[in-house]
Image 1 (cartoon, rainbow, N blue to C red):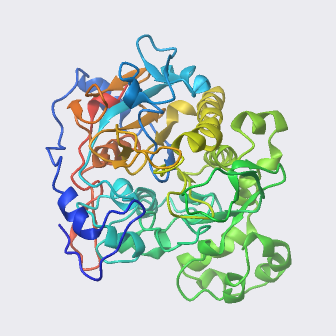
Image 2: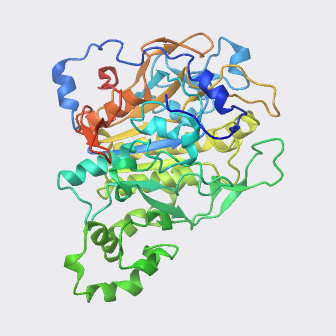
Length: 494
C-alpha cells in the first residue's frame, strides 16, 4: 500500500483518507484466475490479435449494477424504483430502463463479478496496471507512482513495432475532453496518462464545442447553480476538435499554435508555410506528429460527425455521449487503434456524472440511462453492419459499483461499492450473449468467479495481439507488467 501523507482530505461522499485505509482492507480476497473455462486451446489461440482496435467507454463516477446489468427484482428494497426486464438472451435480465440495450445483449458478455478493494474514484486503478491505490493520487496525474493508461501502452507498443501514426489517425485518442476539465475541480483527472512511458504517449485529447440543452437534475442538495449538461442533450452543429490538451511535449517550433484553442483551427493558414519549411525532415518524432496533424485532412475528417446522416446521429442520441460514440466509430473506421469516450462530469465535480450519492433516481431516469440506452446499442449495431464489430473490442467499464442499500439522502442515492459490480464487453473476440459470475441476492458480494479490473486489461491486451505478460520500463529502467497483476480470462473469449 502506498503511504498516505498530508492533511486530512474529504472525498465526494465524505470518505476521508484515514477511512480509506480501513476500507481498503475489506473484501481483499483473491483476484487471480479462479479456474479456466471450458474453452479449447485452438479457440483461445485464434482469438489472439482478433481485435484490430478498441473503444473504451468509461462512465465516470460509476454506474449502479442494480440499475444496469444486475437487477435484483426479488428484493424490492434493494431494487428500488426501477425493475428488471428480459433481454434477447434467454434467462438474462437487465434494468427495465434499457429496452434498446436489451435487444443487443446477444452481442455482449456481462461480467457481474467484478471486484477490487478500493471504493473510490480510482480511474487510474481501473485503466492501468497500478497495483494499489490511494485517493491522494487522484489529483496528482503526473505522480511517479502512476502506471501508464491502457491506450498509452497500446500506442507505445505500436510505435515500437513501427506502427507510428505519422500522417494517419493517432493510436490513442480521448473524447470528449481531458477528464474533468469542464468541472469546478479539474485537478481530479489521474489515470488516462502515459505515466513513466512519457507524455508523448498521452491520449490526443479533443474538445467539443456544442452547447448543452438539458438542464440537468441537481447533483447535491447544496448545489446552487444548475447546468445545461451536453450529456443530456446538445445541438446538431456541435463538433469535436483538437484540444489545447492535445499539445505534444518537447521543443516544438510551432509554439504559438500551442496557445490557440485548436491545432486544426489553424490548418488553413499554416499549411502553405509548413510546405515551404526546409527543415521538416530534421524534426523529431513529436514535431513530425504535430505537423502531420496540421497537414493531413484525415483526422479532421474522421472527427467530423456532421458528415453522418442526421438520422444516424439521432439514433446514437443527440447528446454528448452518443455523439462521442459516433466519433469513436468514425475514428476506428479511419484507422484509429484505441479511442476512449468518457462520460464525464460537467459543471460541478461533486457527485457528478454517474456518482449518484444524491438524486439518484432523477438523474438515472432523466440524464443517464436514456443516453446510454441510445448510444450503446447503436454503436454495436453500427459496427456490426459495417463489418467492424468482430475486429473492434468495445469495453464499458468504470471505477467501481454502488451499494445495494439505498440511502436516505435527497432524491435517494447509492454510495461507492467495489466489492461487486459489472462490466460489459463486446466485439473483438469476446463471447456473445454470456454472463460471467454471479452475486449474492442483494448484489453486494461476488458468489463465484471474481474478476479484477486488471484481468479486463490483460484480456483486452491479449485480444489486441499483445501478450499480457509484456513489460515496459519505468524511468529507472525497471520492468512493469502492462496489466499489473491481471490475468487472461478465457471465459470472456468466444
